[in-house]
Length: 212
Image 1 (spheres, rainbow, N blue to C red):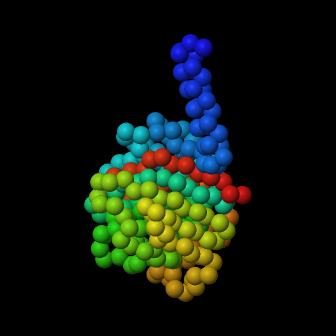
Image 2 (image 1 turned 90 degrees about the vertical axis):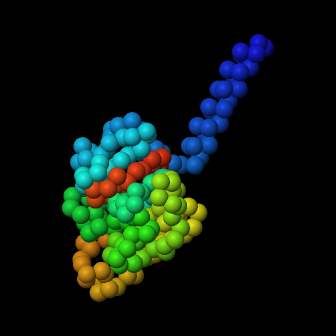
């Protein structure tokens, strides 16, 4: 067999192996690193820069996948500027503030952000359950995060360390920050998205695996 044929066969085998591995892994990319096809909401307030979703400075709002998810795992990378603030919208219904109308908003925040309630720190279920701090990489570096949502439970692994593992159904509403109501907490399905607050927070390599 000619060398070119061998190389072609090897390349085909590698492609098949990669596809099979990805298929077995069960994760599907929900962002093509080029544009916002498959996403809804105020996408004009965001842009794609070097393959990453970036909230335009001074802009914001919640953009979300058109597809909805029940139980799922999402893997992504993020980078925050100093005092950067954003959030992951979990089971978002498509309207309202995801911290309240969705199951929850998982904070995406500079770990050195000062003057906040512990339930506002990075990885926290906003206003309900506090995540551990001190596991974020320095400003300007990419962080890896995996979030698992099953029923009312939510687990956040940041750079290999579990910073939140909580059953939100067991959190006493009387203890919610500001005693605010969270009507979306009982949702069993919804969109996944990003809740921008005017800071140039970046996200890339966004993959979701359905569990239900």
